[in-house]
Amino acid sequence: MRTIVPDMRGRGRSSKPPAVSDYRLSTIVRDVTGILDALGIARAHIVGHDWGAGVAWLTAALAPQKVDRLVAISVGAPGTGARPTLEELQKGWYRLLFLFEGVAEELLQRDDWFLFRQFAPGAKDTEAYIKTLSEPGALTPALNWYRANLPVQALLGRAGGPQLPMIQANTLGIWSSGDLYLTEEAMMRSEQRVQGGWRYERFEGSHWVPLDQPERLNRLLLDFLQ
Image (cartoon, rainbow, N blue to C red; front, side, top):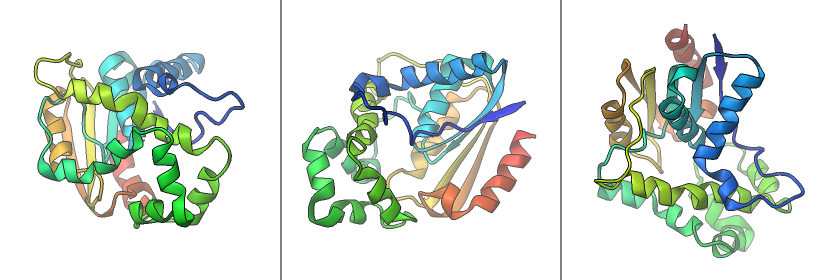
């Protein structure tokens, strides 16, 4: 059994400016399943953090025959139908800002990236991120993830909207107590969308679980995916 870890960092870094629609999760899911087919992999363990978790959830929902086990870190399952809590709205303020093309880019870079530095206080290697995002054509593709998918997420969260298939794979959800952007409640609601086995693990620390606690995370993955 192979384990696939979606890595979202390199998408959109070609000479041709990508369209916002290129970042739709449904498009990325086709990328993931296409890679599996090209490698001759019938089923895989899928592990994702943040937007990678969004891709992992949707892959497990739309291509259940491809996913043996699913691990979602920080981001809960889409399509639970619950209205956001006040905590979720407060933590998610930046998602609305990112929808304003040009405005968001200018504000994030203003005064030596002041807003970005305030926005990611727990992130390691902040200067390296800033250096990468300062390269021509790098920042807008990063924000396009939000511009392509927030309307879809809002629709899925609305009562009476289209419903994603239930998750058939055994699933591990991981959330960290110091997450400034996502809530534990959203992750806990994910159990409603899982028909396979559900397991939840709570970490202490920031949103950046794979960077902050790689040893504990790897032990947990090895235990769950074996």
